[in-house]
Image (cartoon, rainbow, N blue to C red):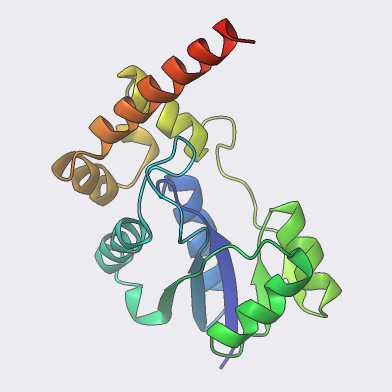
Length: 181
């Protein structure tokens, strides 16, 4: 049985992520999804907790009827990049292949001898978590960019409100910092 690895922060899970996961599952029997930066939340770039991101993945993959082929594992950052792959290996079951488009992830896993395949990007100009968060913060239409399970989950759990509050806070902080520099 072939097992592969896919790493993302999923802040939040969007349709580009889902397309990449489905692509990886076409080329693997089982997929380990690492929810990166698990220790980060309530930040502009990382507004959601690891648990919330795991739940978004679970609800979406369950609805797609592919959850039985997936393991979802949160993993914190390791500040020493040379130690990251051995840290991943110590946390997850054995895997043979990595799917990623992130330059650092690709380089680190290749350096450790793993086969790495870049996934085709789907509607990349708009399917980025940064764009989803920007639309959430500005009151734009972000629903078409995420699976409906993610939209429903974030609306129910006030995710949009949190992103708006974080955006306001960080915008105010930046304005205050500019005044004193």
